[in-house]
Image 1 (tube, each protein chain N blue to C red):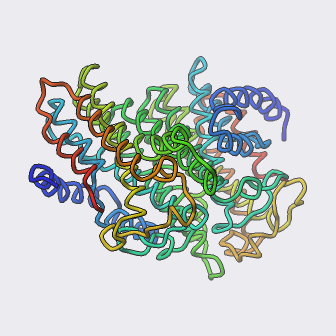
Image 2 (image 1 turned 180 degrees about the vertical axis):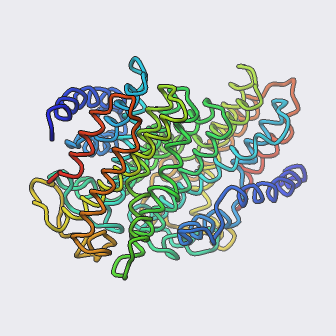
Image 3 (image 1 turned 135 degrees about the horizontal axis):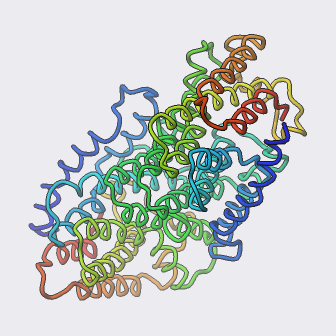
Length: 288
Length: 288
C-alpha cells in the first residue's frame, strides 16, 4: 500500500467509524441483542474500502461538506449485512471473519439473519434521510437480483459444477463490483458530477471491483489465513466458482492486471486521479 | 366479512396481483431460481390487507390516480420477505404457509434467505421510483430494530419464558402494527393528507394491527389449520409470547375488542369511514 493510500485510509477510517457509531443504536438500546450483533459485525476492523471510495469520488467530483458520510456509512452497513448472510451455515458456512468468529457463531443463526436484515433497513433509513432519491435507487439496484443477491444465488448454484469465465464474471460483477459501483456513483451523484465523470468512475469501479474479487479468489487459495482474517481454502472445499478454477491461476492474475489497467485508463486525463491509481495498485498487489 | 369489505377486496386483489406481476422479474429472468422463489412466496393467496390498507387510505385522503399501487405492492413484498425469514428453521421453523410448504422447504434455506433479501431490495427500488423520500423513511423505520426486526428479536428471546402484557405488546406492536401503520401512512403521505388525518389513521392502524395479531394468537390455539393455511399450535409448541399466554384467553379477547373500538373512535367523524369500520369488524371476527 503506497503512502497516499495509507494516509487516506488512516485519515478516513476513524471518521467513518465515528459516524457508524453515531448512526447505529447503542448496545444499551432495547432490544439490546440485535444492536450488539449489528455492532459486533460492523466494528470488526474492516478496511472500509467502499465508504472511502464513496467519499473520495465525492471529493474528486468537487463535492463539499459532510453530506457524503452518512450515505457512505449506509453502504458499509449494506456490505456488512451481505457478509453476515453470506457467512451463514445455509450459505458459505464460514466460521471466521476478520479474525473473529462470524456473527452467527456468536449470536446464533436467528439473530445473525436479523442483524443483517436490520443493517439493511437502517441503511435505507439513512439513505432516505439524505433526501436524495437517486442514491437510494443506486443502492437498491446494487443489492437485488441483478446485484449482490443475484451473484450469491449463482455462486451457490455453481458449487461443484464446471464453470467458464463468463459465469464467474456474471457472479463476481454482481457479488462484488455492483456495490463498488454503487459506492462510486453515490459519491458522484451527491457531488453533482456530470455525465462524463459519472460514466468514467462507474467504469473504474466496475473494473476495480472485479479485480478485487479475482484477487480474493487467488488469496483464498494462496493467502495467509491469519493475515486475511478469514477461513482460507473454503472456496476449494466448497468447489466454488472462482477465476482460478475457471481459467487457471496464471490467466486469473493476467485478467486482474488487465482490469486494473482498464480501470486506470477509464479515468479522465484532466483530473487529479492519484488516489484512484493508488487504490487500483493496492488491489492488484494486496496480500490480505 | 361484510359486503363492502368483500367487494373492496375482490376489486383490489386482482389489481394488486397484476401490479406485483409487473413489478417482480419473471420466472424466466436469470437467475431464474431466485425469481421463482420470490414469486412462489408472493403469489401464494395472501389476503393483501396491507396494500389494500394503503390504497384505501390514499383514496380516503382524496388521493387520485395510480401512484399508490407500486408503493402498496412494495409493502406487500416487505411483508412477504418478513414471513419468509420468520418461517426459517433458525426462527419459527414453520413448514406450512397459506396451505403450501414454506419457501425454504421448496427452495432450501439459502435461496429462502436470499428471496427475502431480494424482495426487500426490490421494495426499496420501487419505493424510490415513486420519487417520495418520506415513504421510504416510513417503511425503513417500520422494518428495523424498532419495528419488524425488533419485534421478532424479542419474540425469539421470550420463547419459553414468563411474559407480561407489556412485553407481548412490545413484540406485537413491532412485529405487526408497525407495517400496518406504515401502510396507512404511505397512503396518507402520497395523498397529501393533513396532520390531523395522518394522526387519526396512524392511531387506527396501530390499534387494528395490534388487534390483528392478538386474534392471530388466539387462532393459533383455537383455529382450524386448513382454513388458516398454516401450522397451528406452533406458538404453544415453542411456548411463544402471546396474549393468551400473558393474560389468558378471555382477557385477550377483551383487549382485542377494546382495540377495535379505539381504532374506530380514532377516525375523524367528518369523513366517510365505512371501509375502515368494516375492516376493523372483520379483524375482530375473523376465523382464519
